Amino acid sequence: MSQMPQQAAVSKCPSCEEPLEPGDRFCGACGYDLSVVPAPPEDSPTVVMNGAAPGPGPARDDEVDWPTARDSDGQGRPAPVHAAAELPGTDSGGSPLPSQEPSAPEEPAREPGRESAQEHSSGVRLDRPAEPDEYPLQAPAPRSSPEPAAAAPAAGAAAGAGGKVCVACRAGRVDRDGYCENCGHAQPRERDHMEQESGPVAAVSDRGLRHHRNEDAFSVGCTALPDGAPATVAIVCDGVSSATRPDDASLAASRAAGESLLGALPRGTHPQQAMHDAILAASHAVNALAAEPATAREQAPHQNAPACTLVGAVVTAGLLVVGWVGDSRVYWVPADRATPPARLTEDDSWAAQMVAAGLMSEAEAYADERAHAITGWLGADAYELEPHTASFKPDRPGVVVVCTDGLWNYAESAQEMAEATPLDAAVRPLHSARVLVGHALDGGGHDNVTVALLPFPAPPQGAGSA
Image (tube, rainbow, N blue to C red; front, side, top):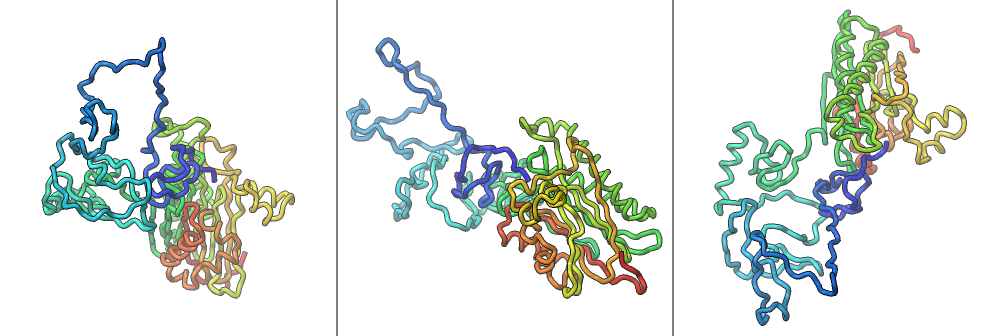
């Protein structure tokens, strides 16, 4: 899917120099907030008017009183360069920093052209030494009190008051924007990695290795039909990155569809009709986001209304129902791997249209850069909503894999998906979902990854197949 509009015109992360993709708001390697990258300084050249350079303006009260350059005659000619240590430093509140005489520690090695932290004791670090590949989180020195023990009661008070404690320094309280008030570290978001197990069905979603946020969402649950037979439900949604608020769209759609299914099945609604109605409910939920003020605030030029794809499955005794809009997929993986697996959905995408029209082979179509351009989605600007539903009656036990393209990009064919799925997936669905997410991350993790697994029990004796 398309990428989000670029926030800062930088090609590498200012923190770790990791290459960035267009639209990244956070570095995928170290989590650096790219929105704080300063804009290039304005060019304000000095212009000579009437043959004379402009003189100095009137003195301002807030100007810095720089000391006279060292080894000079008082007029600043011999050495016009000052070290930052020549000025008294202040903390973020404007109070003077405590004066400490360093005991001349050994100068650490540093890269040519980089300055050490001691050369910027004013509280603002203008540069940094080379950083390692791993980023261990370390507790910083307390800001105000010189005694380290003073931070512990504050952390306990924050936790006792119901506030979150920073995962980096383990001392500061996390503010409403998700940043530590002590060290400023951005906290990991809840949706970066999600896991849920509900009875026999389980799902895992991960942000991946390249995206700044997780725009996938899922809903899983189990209920009972009017005759008491169990039914399991899984919905997986993938936000359209070129749209406004794609993460909100996928979350709203997955919740609406899941609630619709879990409410309709106990009333006796046929699972295939219930799936159709659930997709319509998800569509209404996503459409409603377009009218919310939050969408208007985040709407960028040439950006579409909130949108996402949806795929889902319902497993009952002897019946498997799938439904979808977009390019997320459902795979059937039999417990007996000697029998062939199958893909149960057809993508709403440019590549699928080319293959269906006989214009390209599947390998050629999905190798094209336009392959993942979707032709169906949920959203206020969708051309025409066409929910797809299908029902199957497998004649043997197996597991149903419901996933976004963040997974099937690394296991596209049904055989590849079966090979990546653990043999005990039917009895360990959560573990197997983690394994499949790990398979995508090991392959590169270039997209958000979400997968749900629903075991399909052995059909009753005498049941036929369809």
